[in-house]
Amino acid sequence: MPAEDLLSIQSYMRDEIAHLELGGRLVAESRFDFKIYMRDWDTTYPLQVVVVLRSLDYIDSAGLASLIGGWKKMKELGGELVVAHLNPSLQSIFEVSSLGKFFKIFQRTEDAIQYFKENPLRDDKKSKPAEKAISEEKVKK
Image (tube, rainbow, N blue to C red; front, side):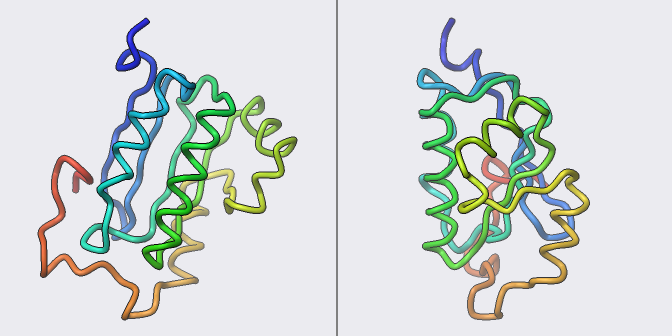
């Protein structure tokens, strides 16, 4: 199966927070789709990101590594990446892998949004859309 058929990434803005909905399988063959997506993320894009996993069927160690890479990228930029809507099998993978050390994990997207509202970025860490418009390819409003 071609990698592009394994993973889907839908992006949109809600409450000034970027949402990335992953669907399908985040595995060795598809991990580069997510890595490439995050590679060009910079401070002109929203620095509060919720990765919604409700439609992700499976993740392997390579997929977990790419998520951790996205988390590290956001941390380097002064932002934060959290995950929401893990199904029971993904929840157990995250627990067994102790990924709670990296990611804040929320049952619902609304809980992640509330977390970001209660923990806003400092003004010097906020994205700067005036310098560069947010690309519709990166995050759709």
